[in-house]
Structure formats: structure tokens, C-alpha cells
Amino acid sequence: MSKEILKMENISKAFSGVQALNHVNFSCEKGEVHVLAGENGAGKSTILKILAGLYRADAGEIFWQGKRVTIKNPQQSQKLGIAMVFQELTLVAQMTVEENVYLNAEPRDKFGLVDRKALRRNVLAAMDQYGIHVDPAMLVGELSVAQQQMTEILKILVREPELIILDEPTSALAKQEVERLYAIIRNLTAMGKTIIFISHRMEEIFAIGDRVTVLKDGNYVGTRLIREMDEDALIRMMIGRSLEGTFPQKQAPVCGETVFEAKHLASPDGKLKDISFTVKKGEILGVAGLQGHGQSELLNALSALYPLSSGEVFLKGRKLKARNAGQAIKNGVALVPADRKNQGLLLELSIRHNTAISSLGKRMNGGVFIDSRKEKAFVKDTIDKLSIKVGNMEHPVHSLSGGNQQKVVLGKELAIDPQVILFDEPTRGIDVEAKREFYVIMQRLAAEGVAVIMNSSDLMEVIGMSDRVLVMYEGGVSGILEKEDINEETIMRYAMGVGQKQAQAGDGQ
Image (cartoon, rainbow, N blue to C red; front, top):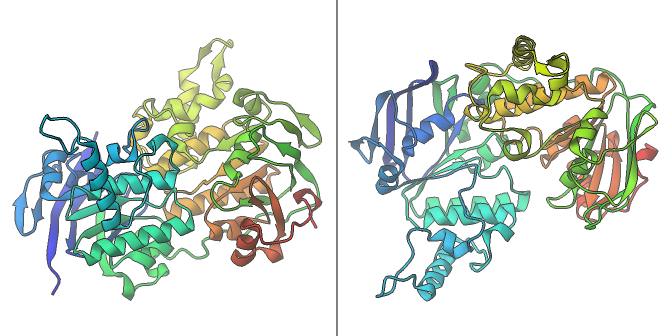
């Protein structure tokens, strides 16, 4: 018989007058994977940060293993046996894996010094116990994102928590690494550990979850057994209606007119090799490949954030020259980056400043001073057009949910009236409704003649949105797939270097 390990009753929390949680109920059973689902801004992170001791609830009660508890800070939460792995990793890049794993909990010798042999012995034993293997002597800053994620999880597990919160743990992982994480989660639940899992990827929810609780606009919607649901039923719970057709119908047919062309692009470090392609009016060019084969470097190079040693870029027949991002913006090239927090936003600045920063010249008086009235009007219009959930535009942008932060990045880039827009993992970490909004905007931009290039590790997204797909392997173009050939199996063959190299993307054949 299942045993309830956690119960949260009538939890409420408000920030600056905005109700983030309104009498929400949530409970977990020992040994289950409990998915917490909902759109961005639904209140998922807020209730989990209350559980982790980072926020204090305004009202409500928490029961841990049948006893009422008050969690005032993270230390109290950890002492109870609750641990949270955040989307933003908390590792120290200049320290080794083993030093990070046992940071502030290092084994000591009789003189009070760190016992290095015991430290290595303990970390190797923990790696064997949980099936996580990373070189303990490696500096964390030299690890891949996936290895850093595993190190972060191991750092939590050695504290032996009873309940582990995983907030979007797969957002930066490739498919094979996701499967590895699933194996670790199954191992943990077999040991009696409880997992709270947040993900916006439907396939993950149904692959790993036992039960799901849905929140919407800070309210509790319901809890269901995942085996008794399908994707459409879950989406109806999340957004209040069925999401008919995840990918929108095209607004305009692709014509033969070339709007953007790249010829023989290469980088001095060899991560980009002889890449050529075109984008035609009305089309979306998808970029696909296994993680680390140059997809993001290509988009960054087109926006002058990554150096090129050779090659040329043309917009409507005109050769573009850009030595830096500012010049690329003046040429009408916009980038929605994969890492919105480090590349797309200034987190401590306001929503208003972040939205307006790329197009300040449009709202200057006499070319010297910013017209604050024009700026506020522009930001309000952007918020309305993109349906950004904002309490106050003067609040720092880090106060927004991930999906709304991504919309601010998009609004900032659209403000320059781009002629080329590059989407690098545009829907990572955002909910299904926000994804559809992004897809509609992409289709509209393509129909208006903007060159749209989208890199995504979500193959269903690539297949659903692309008119052609440029597949990359080891920094080069391994194949160009036309619409009738775009499917998961074919993309993966070229992504693994198995397929015969086709005509360059510019040929359109």
C-alpha cells in the first residue's frame, strides 16, 4: 500500500500583488515519480521553492511524513530530507567534480584537513551506487553540460535525501543522455526515493511519470494517474482546451525567390566546415544534428557572435559584412539564443529595459535622450502582442517565468524589424501553449519574407516546422532534406554520418 510522504494544503503566495499560488494542494507518495505540469507562470516553481525553503508561503500547511512542519529556510528543508536540482546549475567551475560533490561536507582527517583519499573513495562509491560516472578529478568547467548536470544530481544524492525535485533536468541533454537520466530515476525510486519532476516535454512525462498534478494560473487543476491519460487529455488540463494540431498551418507557400544565402562558411577552430545553404521566401529552414556538431555555432556565426575564417553571407543578393553583433543587428540579423539567461537577457534590469535595449535608436529625442513615454508605449505594445504575463514592466526580468523571459527575448529581437531571424532552441523549457505561439510567429515572419532559420534538438519540432532541413555532422553539412524526406529516421541517419551527402541546401533539389 502506498504511503504519503508529502502533503501541501491550501498553499498561497503573492509577489507584489500578483497571486502566484491560490490555495493549491499537492501531495506525493513514497517511491513515485510525480510530475508537476502546467504552462509557464502556472506556479510550479513557486510551490517547489516553498518546499525547498527558498520562499515562505503566505498561507497553507505542509505535512512531511505525516507531521506538520514549518520550512523557514533551505537548511531546514535539507534536514528533513528534501533536495532540489535547479535548472541553473550551482557548481563551482574552478573546482573538481569530487570537490563539488562534497562541497561543505568533505571528509576530514584527525588534523581537521580534507582527507583526499577518503574524498575520492566516497565519490567513487557514490557513483557506483547511483550509476553516475564522471571523472572525479576533472574540473567542472571542462565538463560537457550533460556531465555537469549529472554532477549536480550526484551532489544532491550524496546527502541521501528522501525526496528529490528535478526542475527541467533534461533541457540541455541529448536523447541518449535523457535515457541515462531515466535509468538513474528508476534506480532511485526502486530504492524508495520520491521524485518530483518538472518537464514541458510530453514524451518525457509519459515515459517516466507515475502521477501528474496540473496547475494553471496559480490554481490547482487536478491530479491523475499518467497511465490513465493521453497527451490530449493532459493538454486539456493544462490549457483548458484541446490543442488541435501542435504545429500551425503555413500562411504562405514557399516560392523560388532566395532571400538569404551562405557560401562556404568555415571557422578557424574547425567546428564549422564548408557550409553553404539558402533560405527561400516563405520557408523555414530547420537545422538538426546530434548535440555538439556545430548547430549553435552556425547560428552564432551568422549573427557575428562566433568567428569565421572564410565564407560569405548574402541578403537578397547584397553581401553582408558584420564584425560584431551590433553590425549584424544593423544588417537586420536577429538571434533568439539558446541560453536566454546568459546571452539573451540582462537579468537584473527591468522587463522594460530588456525589451527596448536592441532598438533604442527608434525612441531617441534629438538622437541624444531616450523618450521614456515612447519606450513605455513600445514595451506595452510588445507585451500585449506577445501575451507576456507581466505584473509590472519595471520589475526585473528574472522575476518572469522561463516562457515569458523567452518572449521578452523574442520581442527585443523583433523590435529591430529583422530581415533574417535565427532561432536557437527557441522552445526549450517553455510550455505547449507558448510553443504554439512561437510557431505561429515563425510562420508569420516567413510569410512576410523574413529568412527564418531554426535549430532545435526536438526532432518533432524540426519535422513539424521545417520546409527543408539542413543536417549537420562534425561541423559540416551531411545532408539537405526536402519536405517529403523529412522524418525522424532519415534525420538521425544523416546526423550520425550514415547518409550519403546530398546537394547543398542552396540547390533546393
